Image 1 (cartoon, one colour):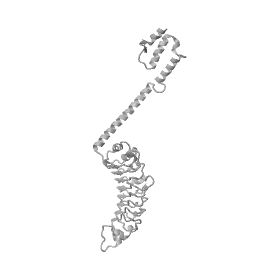
Image 2: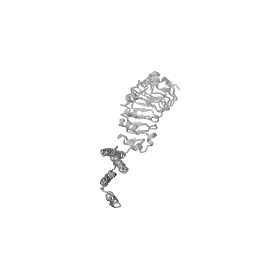
Image 3: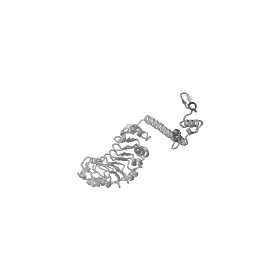
Image 4: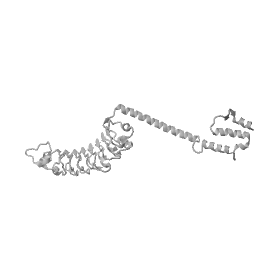
Length: 331
């Protein structure tokens, strides 16, 4: 269907003056509601150049480039159409709300001039692959955007959204997010987020998912539609701090222990290797062996062997008789 002047006249609550022509009235219009009309061609809408609010959701529009005709627009509703690209917004510098859910948009872009945008809804696009994100568009709206809904867009990474420091509400549910590090980066940048939705992502199925996300942000008051109690956050933060202290202590202990072992010669050619070398030499009776040097040197060798094995006694007792006495008895 194509938009006609008659269709527009019947789609607004504003009243036309008795002496006012159609063209004058269309030019004066600020609100037009044309949702669910099967519209594929915007047609006569080009006469409504002073529109503030335009409702065109649930139609058959293949493109949104036509919206450039209304530079005064602040609210634009185009969800559930056949739009494939965000375009035509360069002149809409006063735009505050943009609804684009359920279209065919594969790239978040075209927002470099929309520095007053406060709310962007672009969820559930019918696309074959992960939605791409234009960093320059995000930079342009980073000081104004407070609401972002980007659910169900096959996103595997979300770190790009960390630049949106003014966000209060963020919906990334139904994507393919797997890593907590990704969410930690987003929340470190979006430090004012109060409501966050991550359900129906792979990471939401991991152990202690909710607890891990809660401790990432002190501003969160709601996660996946469920309130976060102050007492719950306080408990989880204290628990995480305790675990951190234990990890640091364990790491410090391991470092000290490794240093001690190194000083004692426990690594490489240390006591263990000297002990093995001596024991092999002693048992072989070869060159350097003390067995061929007589009882006195044999006794000395016995003591040295015992020390090499880590014994703290001067004599090794066998059947309650000192080893050196057993040597003399045998002789």
